[in-house]
Length: 144
Image (cartoon, rainbow, N blue to C red; front, top):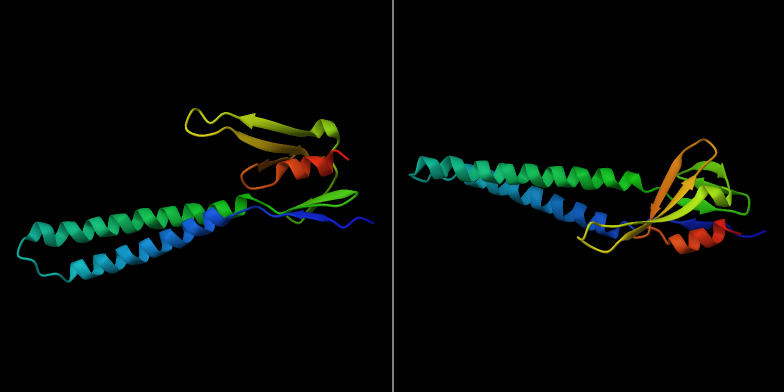
């Protein structure tokens, strides 16, 4: 019997973004607290600089939570001889008509993206983008 093939998403850029945004958030909160204790004679500077630091901390926190939410969008795919397991959910192998590889144009901002679309029997469509998964290897295993 053939060993199951496991395809995990490549999430290095998301982990890097989480780290950067977390560090920037902590830095701006520290800076805002420190600027709040500043006793500058100009009242506008005493209020405006901490407010800007808190605003930048809020923006970095939103970026952190957006990146954290993105971690849950990409499941692990496991393909065996008779079934495929997507994020812990077992499905039969799809027929050839339920497997599509589509190319999406980026609108001129970057290269076009290829996405592998799998339709399962329970009418769910799973998308596996090329920048996260080896779609050619997955297609080769599903076409057997």
